[in-house]
Length: 189
Image (cartoon, rainbow, N blue to C red; front, side):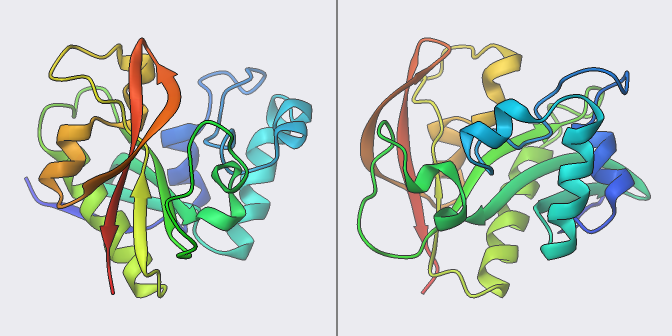
């Protein structure tokens, strides 16, 4: 199977990966780290998807993985300065470098266990590189090989990012699914 990763420019494909099965449901739409907390809490149901549609007019909010014409994965990546990681008290800044944040990697059910997450990380890094990012950071769990609940696996694991060439650069005080999160970085320049 050939996987192609490209910038998320098609709203319907983003909806396939991030939208709810029922339009009146409240789901993340990958906004919780992208917008200020007050905005994230105020957005409800269909308004969340419309907000993503508006964000997409400013540029791709991430990358999508395709198997042929079928969208099978998503990774959120954006300059850290425009995310809540810029002001996080739990996830520290390593330095003043204008790094991009990679905070969500999702693979559709039925396509997991095929290496698509690795393609997504590589594609997200290449997208950031093409946009001039000096480095990409991720904030995965350091689970030491233990199983991570699928609902919390979107941040990835330390091992997954190490396989992609990232290095641990800091500990955090953030914990997800009982596992500590770490700051992983890949320098691009």
